[in-house]
Amino acid sequence: MDIKELLNLVLEGYQGEDKKYKGIVYFISNFTSALVFFIIHLIINSYEGIVALMFISILIILLGAILIVRRRKLGRDAYSYFNKITDEIVCYGLTCIIISSISVFFIYPPLLGVFIGSIYGLLMSVEGVLFKSLIRKFGGLLLILSTLIMIVYLDYQFLILGIVQMIIAILHLLDFKKN
Amino acid sequence: MDSIFNSEVRVKILALLYGMEYCEYNYLLKKLNTTHGNLWSHLKKLEKEDYIEIKKYPLKKGVRTIIKIKNKGAEKFREYLNDLMEFSKKKV
Image (tube, each protein chain N blue to C red):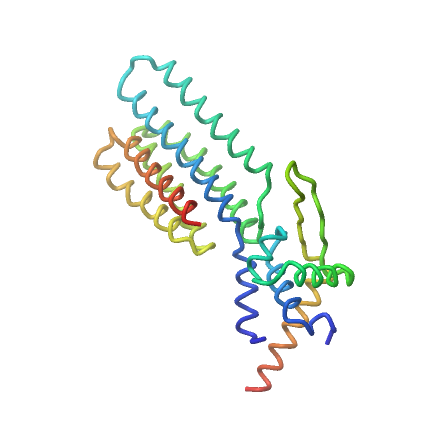
């Protein structure tokens, strides 16, 4: 057996992932977050029925979390070291999103969506690079670039964020169906 | 060199498992493109030598078989890889 072939196999092991599992989980998380962003846009732009809309968005988040936990309980086919590293990066990334969201909310609230979009986009691109996933790299870049449009149309930032998330969710669904 | 590394399938199994926390049996079967019987016999041999760990979990439909590389297996594979690299350097 050729040494190059062997090293490629080792790298393949490091990058090993359960594509079906990730496809489902990413579709659920992107789809639910897109719906929540649409509702946030509605809450910000219309002051009618705020309580009902907030109740619906919490329900959607809960539904998404339940679906992901249920899928996680079934277990994944492969869990590589890159998966382990990514899980850790996502934990730190989410902490960064929460803390910076709080800071931005108190300093300049209209830029909230821009911050969330760019950090989330960066996290997605990092994962795309680690696992050589074109969809995640493209999705992350799309999110980062969409923040430029958000700055121009600040009133529609959550709507834009929701649309981009929905596009990424559809791409994940198509990729999952292809596999 | 360890007799375990005489088989290409066993080397491939260890190479794949080296960078993984764990993987499912069917994942390995698909990646190595081999037969069920062949893969299982090699896995059993690796388990006997304490290179890997095979765990079975009952599911509603069937059984889930998880395979994990052990410290001994990872260490031996690293040594094998180092030997192979040194050998190829000398050859050049």
